[in-house]
Image (tube, chains in turn yellow, red):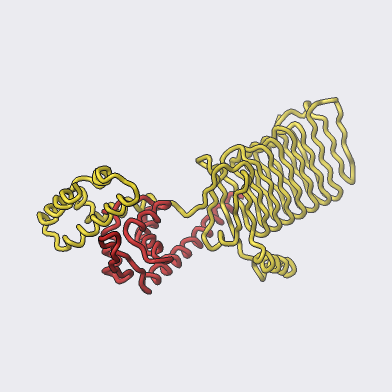
Length: 302
Length: 107
């Protein structure tokens, strides 16, 4: 059957006056025999290659190359069966975005990706920035702080992580920025030193953020159980947070909080150096904001 | 991604699949399969074009009583990959600039 098929292809090549006949026939024969060696059925292989006319037309069809190129995806690492993402970061900027499948995909350029150590361990996806590289990058970040005007700019490293719904986050970060956009999940826990944090259109079971000097911005965030934010000198700007238990502590932080809900549903406790407010009506919903040296502004959407 | 950016990338993928070791048709298709599915007849003109351009050379080795053609990347083949990566890096910095401006305008 194979010889017959090749002979028909030979006839087709002859009919088209193609000079490199032998070369093409050798190539096709090798391909078919290699597929057979790897367990495919000869008849099925021939069927998949098509009629002799189709095979020969395909060999000289540059459009087929263009069509195949259209299908090339940007190089990404893909992980399935992930339940939790654990990040140990120093300087990387991480963007967490919704995935279009049930797999976690991490995209970065190859050069930057080589600085990340990624492994999947019992449903826990651990993403760590390589230690050898911490030292130098930390030095650069430190120096750029000393020479405040950024004479020694630290390179920006960025990774995009596409995450399906329901995966929990446990993130430790130093100076890298973190953003979560359109994410639906259970628990989000973030420890950050100086990097900024952005949450936009996020739904979470609970939210726990510890931040030292970085700023936090939140837009349209829904938290089912509890929101707990501890800050030192960074600022918080929060628009439309829907949550029944909100607790924000800062030291010198300026805090702006707009709660998505009705004022009369909340027990409110505001504590600042100059002037505190307590409204206790025995409500289930609690809003507690505390800062020593900063300023607090808060309000409700209704 | 824009098709324009991908133009020629299949040739580079084929060359890249030869970096670690010399390879043959069936194996090249297999190693490309995580990135893109191509057929035997799509691979043929690419191999011919790359050989004609001296980006790769070929030789035959006997295997199970028949011949199997192996392909080996040349120095200019490696240069072609390097060139592609550099072009891409330039594009990435343009991307970074555009993404940065978009982000700033949104703030």
